[in-house]
Figure 1 (cartoon, rainbow, N blue to C red):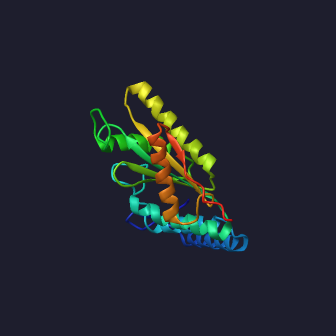
Figure 2 (figure 1 turned 120 degrees about the horizontal axis):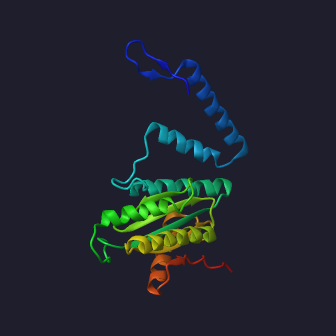
Figure 3 (figure 1 turned 135 degrees about the horizontal axis):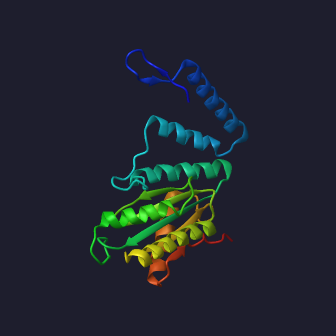
Length: 219
């Protein structure tokens, strides 16, 4: 983008023509979203929010958003599902490694979570978002994904961690619980609870990935 420089200060600023062109583009995109009722509306809202305030990442973990942002983003995806019918996947991960609650070996929790966060970043799509939760837990929200695709994403992460262990001897294990909206529910509390239960069920039977229980069929 071309920019103009202020006299004497050397500070680059956006020209009036460029500003008008950018505003016209945003207006046109908003009209298209209103007319066609697609996820474009959600994307525009996210872009506007990020332009006004840079996304806050978890300190020391460039690949992870902060815990408080997860619930806000989850509510946005649920609303998008209700309005437009777009599904999304939700996966929770519990990490065991040096410095974690149940981990063994030398090292810090922050280092372990940083390694997992980096591997997770390489295991998901650009539109997916990874969040740090409490203690040793992480969460991924994946727009327009089903349960099957969520399981595949979790398995990619596990494969990358296995490769890291083979290459450098760093032993990190992850248990995952995967659900999808609307398949497993359409409210935040239910989805998070089912993902957490699936993760602990998988760990109890020695499996790396568990899938949430489906709602009981109505008579």
